[in-house]
Amino acid sequence: MKIILILFTAISLFGSDYNSMIDSFENGDSDRAIVFARQNATLGNKEAMYNLALLYYSKGDIQRTEQWFNSSVKKGGKGAVGIGLIMLSRAQYSDVINSLNDSTSGTIRDSLVNVSHDLLENQDNASSQDYLLLGKLFYSDKIVHLNTKLALFLISKAADKGNREALAIMGDANNIMRPISLKAPLLTNSLSVALDYYMKASNLGDADSMAKMGELHIIGPRNIRMVQHGVDFVLKSANAGSPLGAKLLGDLYLQGLDVNGLGLSMDHKKALKWYQKATTLCEANSKLSTAQDYSHYYNSCQKESSITPGYSLLFEEF
Image: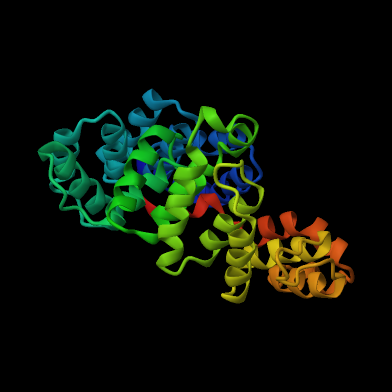
């Protein structure tokens, strides 16, 4: 009776502690989130064990991650998929397959098995979504421990299969080198590679990739600079509904860029029109009145409109 009472108390306590754990994690205090999870995990709560493992995983403490995943699994809780992800990161493909063989089917579990079969047997049967899903997990340190090399390997596999989102991500990954490429274009061809990925993604209907392609042609080093083509791509992306394209077009009108009579000389009214479209998702949109205001606000607006609570995937998806 005493044991049952202790377990019931642990479970009921974790109700309020769970919310505190989420709030702490969402506010960037993962150490405090660990305190809330650990005090319930040590009392035998399998859900707390699982969440504690994920918190340690996001911090890169793989030893404690495995310990608490295994503890949760032994009590009938979740964790098998998390262990599978760690095995995948170690290239233990046969172990992934064997460990998940009797696990309940699920999106991440099935992708792990399918991709592991491919990599173990040198096959190409897993879908682009299988590769992309796993790649994105390792691309964000809010979900599992960041592993950029593995993430880009998996995402590139999805891109090779023609996945539009994967192509766009690979474009962004190569575009990250832009500061170096602009200063020393002969040291890297990353921007040319980025353009190639963006072109393929835009051909599949990705208007944001078209905008990024246009921007690179406008500001890129001499070997890729084709300003007129860049302006054309920005125009097309903005008219196709890309917020980024609308923002870049607003920049062009605000600063003035008239290439061969394309009509993009300085025009604050047109700049304001496109900035309004670019920031339409923001609550503060109605409070701004000038093109300059919108130009300054765009970055924070985009961050606000694209926030996805990391804990939703972190604590629930696996």
